[in-house]
Image: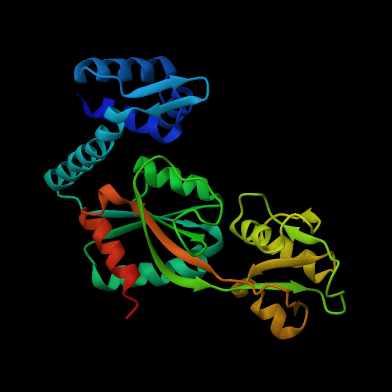
Length: 285
């Protein structure tokens, strides 16, 4: 059992196909398949159920998964200690909250753990961050969700054990241009995977017409032009509400806030860098 085989095994668990895992690892699909076969032979058991819809771990595969991550993390820790390099926390964040929320966490980390290097990775897509957490390319990620279990907002989770910590509420505001009607407007939205789009879908259901506009800045600008209403984070429309270029609408159902969540692999939380991130994120004072 070799580290490269464990890394390949974990990539196939996360990406569900040999082809996608090969792309993520920068390997040929034939190399990924051969490493999996060699690993299965060495363990004497099948690690995946193979079907046209993809590959899912068997019971043995699920048992191996936390061990694979533990061994890979220990190898990385050994490399750093032998080389005398500082521990690095790789923190992922959604682009929509990176500028407004991540700096506070980074500042607390710098103050409390000056011996820790932090690398911030931002991504426009939640799936990219979750795959990064699952694959170990980031240690923890900041994303948006609603109250309840992880993924309750309506997004899929990778097939690895995940844990999360709610950090703070992210209030939402339903806004439109001054003078626009209070009802009957189209709803300006981003792509279907966007957190604010998912929140709007839960609030309005399928009855309201959707008009795709793009990201937060574009959607806000379109709302200012009177092209429809938009459900956006308070922090993104605070200035416009103050100056009167947007007005707040009051829907029949109150708008619940989203939650800023720190998400990490549950089988990695014993690592010092991850522990430091959780401590800093959970303790604002």
